[in-house]
Amino acid sequence: MRYLMVDAGRVVVITGGSKGIGRAVAMRFAQEKARIILVHYDPDETASEKTMDALAKQGIEVESHKVDVSSFEAVDVLFKDILSRFGRVDVVVNNAGITKDTLVMRMSEEEWDMVLKVNLKSVFNCTHAVLRPMVKKRGGSIVNISSVVGLVGNAGQANYAASKAGILGFTKSVAREVAARQVRVNAVAPGFIQTEMTDVLPEQAKESFLQQIPLRRIGSPEDVAEAVYWLCSDAASYITGQTIHVNGGMFM
Image (tube, rainbow, N blue to C red):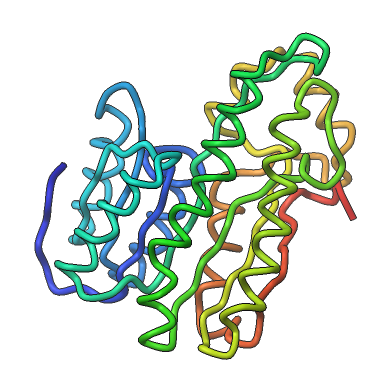
C-alpha cells in the first residue's frame, strides 16, 4: 500500500486495477485528476507498482490494496476504510477476473467455484459495500466488466461464461433498484482484447479469434477504458442498466 496526497477529484475504485484493462481504466481516469484506488490480488506488487508509478508521474492521488475481492468480509473492510478517509466513493469499476478453462466433463468443482467467486461474487461484494453510501448521497456510477463470452458462450469456458453472463443480469437488476436515487449501474462486455490473459494463447487460437472480428484487429485495453470512462461521465447521465459491447463487431 502507498499513498500520494494531492488535491484531486472523484474517488474511483478499480478492482483488477494493477494491469491490463484495469490499468488502462486507471490511466483514463487520471486525465481528470481523479483519486484512484487500485485493488489487486497479484502474487507480488510488481504490476501494481508499475501502474502506481505511471499515475504518480501525472500527479495523481493513488493507492493500492491487495485484497481478495471474492471475500465479503475483506471487501467490507476495504470500503469502510476508503469511506472513512474520503467520505465517499464516486465510481466503482468491477474488473477483477480469472479463468480456469477446461471442458465441463473435466471441470472440477473447485475450478467452477473459484471462477464464480472471483468473477461474479466479487461484483456483488463491491457493489454491496458501496451502494448504500452512493444512494445516500444520491449519485455514483458502477461499471461491471463482463465479456462477449457471457453472451455467446465458448467451449471450455462454461465457468467463465456463466460468471460473465451473471454479471449482466446482476447489472440490470441493481440498476433498477437504485436508479431513482441517481446511481447508475452499467456493464461493458469486451471481446478479444490484448492483455496478459490473452497473450498466453497459441498463435493459432489468436488467428482463429481474429477471423471472427469484422474490424480485423484485436482490441486494446484503452478501447475498453474509453467505454468505461464514458459510462461514468456526465455524457452518459441518462444511461443505466445497459451493456456496451467493445468487440470490433465480434458480437452484434
